[in-house]
Length: 153
Image 1 (cartoon, rainbow, N blue to C red):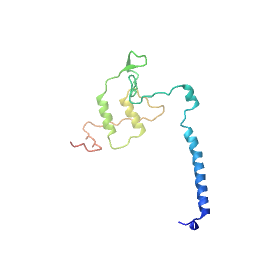
Image 2: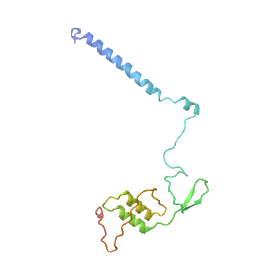
Image 3: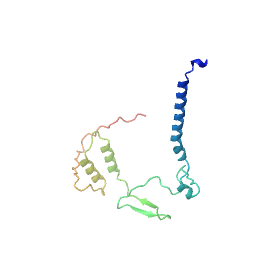
Image 4: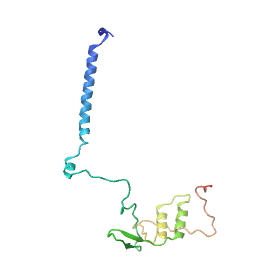
């Protein structure tokens, strides 16, 4: 290519644009890269902290269970750990809860409060909250249809 076909002014402006872009990129990158360095507070603390996040260590808990007022606990060798002595499950109430949850209509707040009050003796609805009576279903009434078909095996 000959020098006669080269636009020197255009080449100059492209070089200026590239230089300005490089300066702008450096201006953005310098604070970002400098944030990788430890802070003065971290330097004053000493050596880096080693954290093992591979799993639970002995004594760590996976979850926490809430106990009702009449449920007791037993002591353990550790002063902050207790063993729960929970009451026996009421399987009739559990069956009623499952059947009620699987029905095909939504429940309003008053009905939910009434069901909770019937199934959980310690439950007290908020003051002034409406609680509707639980309808009595005759013993000879047909069972409601399930929401989904049972699985075939």
